[in-house]
Length: 269
Image (cartoon, rainbow, N blue to C red):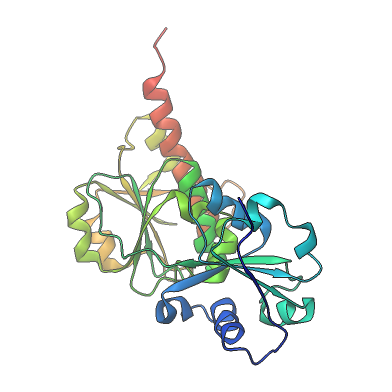
């Protein structure tokens, strides 16, 4: 298989590079352009491993002679730019040597019965990406981002997700009232009310499949979401901190649900 045609661009004012700069540095640009930017070999390979092909591949001049053939052949269009121009379009402190442009998937419809994570106005991109990564690891395959949550396909969320995006069904822009279509029990986290998570686990009170809801970093889960919850849980913190970072809390809760499922499958001696 021959390599695709390669276009060399050396002008900072090139229209394509301007678009790429917006995709890389503006968290909402993907919605306007209908495509998104993933930077770095690890993130790009994560997409390829899931069978997702890029529309455009972009490489630095210094990396282009070293690009592995399996990566060089993936996109129908490849761009090579001087290292300084790639650094200019990158939003990373230490720019990578390559990036892919992907077509934005069609909006996903909420899938009933699928173990899910509900994000209620979680605004920090790093937290959102980390939660996506935990969801993928622990078998929660649907992410439901309520209005006010950080843009799921933004560059910062993609980087923090470390490839989890391509293992998940992502649904954006819903409201609390839409969750009834899930037909699953909703579990809400709280720092001050409800059963302790470890007790709910020991007493086999964690339903599965379910939808775990995690809220705004400062305000927590909304009153509307709390009202429709089937179960409220809190995480014991013997060290005395007032609360946990939302992504840390999510990892603990999702792991508890995954472990519950494993325990149910183990033979009783």
